[in-house]
Length: 491
Image: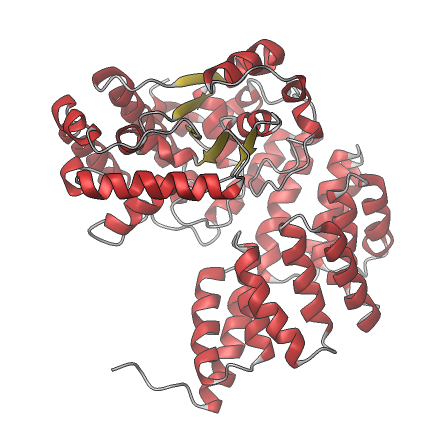
């Protein structure tokens, strides 16, 4: 029997709690309470907007639209509805529609800092970084800006060589009493990025450490290592060979794997720039199936035993994967699924889709792990290993052990793109990459930064620029702070 619907008093309490959780960045919990409250009052505009906001910020803007549009229909005079509608449209790269929604929000609430930040951020999306900065700098410099404007100012000031102003603005704002808890983390990380760009590495690392200690989730490195051990033991050549009989042939899928921050977004952008290819983004088809089959709730899911899949399920997965990918762009000959953690699922991927291409992205281990540690993953489920140097090093080692098993013991073919080689010779490496997926060369791939597409990862603002060299051997700037990481990596 389902639980009784919440009473009006309970809906009121759930609404307050959902709002507070969203403001502190606990999106997963906020949407649970919002959904529960909507069971008692499906016409609650506030709860509909909370659900829409959480879905947009969680990378599911297409699902957010229904809730937001229902909220607007119920209360067309609320500016927050149009603001959230614009945020979802912007995430879907519907920039003209987003601009109209933001302008509607501004007409209803001309002094809203959130709307000011949204309009400025839209200018940034369109490449007008100077215009975006001008849109918020007045309020930031006179101290009247809210946290959203200050964060945008910080990011833009770094890009436009005004790091000193950004550092001062963020520090002044954090010392005030107008900061939402949700923004304390994001602004502390933004301050670290500004300090890094100014060459003040010790101060920057202090910020990154503070970010990683905020609401630090648990990660059981021993349990994960044991799971990888069992996976390697059970995925024998015989078990893998038997499973391959259920595979489905198609050359369309391209799986891009590797550690986060190893160049996976760059590789996908180069492929997506080809007129006969399409960048599907972080779909994670194999990870989704693994999550469905995992025997217990834990922050990782592995196919420890190929026997838990079976040929019939494998065939259904293969057919479903092809249908899903090809449905994203019917005219494309190659469609990517860029999910770094799929490095742990290559046995499944190759068995189910023997004609697919697997691209492995590799980078200097210290640079890779440092980039993970100093990136604000905002409590993304499953990324708890990135918040501690020792756990991070061990996780890296386990992913490499898995890759060595797939390619060595099982003989799975992969094309490896080394980040440092791509930086040194983008033209040559890009040609080899396009050849590996079975397409002829197109000059658009060398101008990947001109390709306009939705990118929802930490590299969103890097793939719209030509390749730069400043991230190579970045770990040397932080050498004295990385003792625990070096020890974990065995370096």
